[in-house]
Length: 347
Image 1 (tube, rainbow, N blue to C red):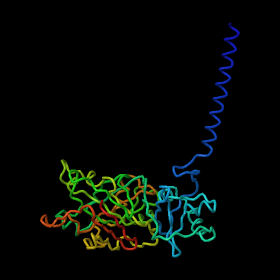
Image 2 (image 1 turned 120 degrees about the horizontal axis):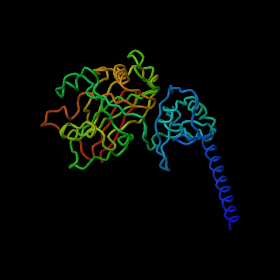
Image 3 (image 1 turned 30 degrees about the vertical axis):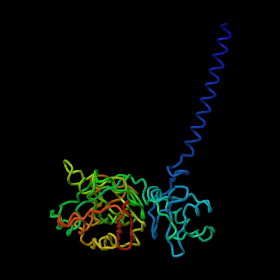
Image 4 (image 1 turned 30 degrees about the horizontal axis):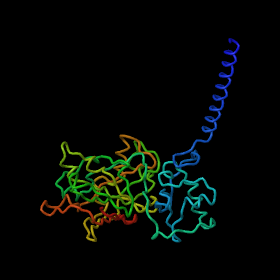
């Protein structure tokens, strides 16, 4: 009996050793080829900001979202071209910004012709979200002189900051699903310039901040004024961060194509009627001041995005007897010069 027990112990120990060795081998193999959240091996090369490009996101038939590059010949399907040319390139804008693999991205763009992959007709594209998972969404409030004047607020000495979350991100041409009226009905538009961070910045002087900007987008800080201003203690986060309350698009445009961000026209149209018509020259705190101030308190990382405030003309700024809040069926178009027209419909 004792010899049988000894035999069983030996077999059991041997089996455990085989399992342990096998498991260790699998772990070592997995750690030798770590994969990124976007699939494929993690990029470990130099971090570079993308230049000279205009990017959109394609909503694919399989439900995935991937990057497209707008060119005079049509839209380059980055995922399809990278696969055809066997280039381990970023396939999403978040990935391109956060990993900084601009070299592979540039190879895909340069190889689009020879790849044989057809250019896409932008008019037939269903747009996806430009940003899905930025590390931070920072918002600056009350940042236009005339807007502060219209709502009777003093010009702030420093940029007032708040935030949105990733649940609020949505795309150009989307149906923005508004809450039921018992939750919120004072719905308002806020067209804004969006700053996209290209490399890590912390305690950066104003004179150097634009060196850290990858590009810009048109955006809308959609707002529920009743939730923002009429709930107990004043709940800016609730009023600004419901699902889909951050439409962005249709394009990310690299900073070198935009030039001075403090001289861009900003407009809003509701059902074809112009509501906002201003210029970022009216910023209380310009782009450099905003970024330097934010970087004093925490680091901004590649792929982080910054909403910069809205100009005068919001519904909140109208006399109370003329405030007609947005409703289901309204079509809102936000325009920032050089960055394209962002359109969405309330549903």
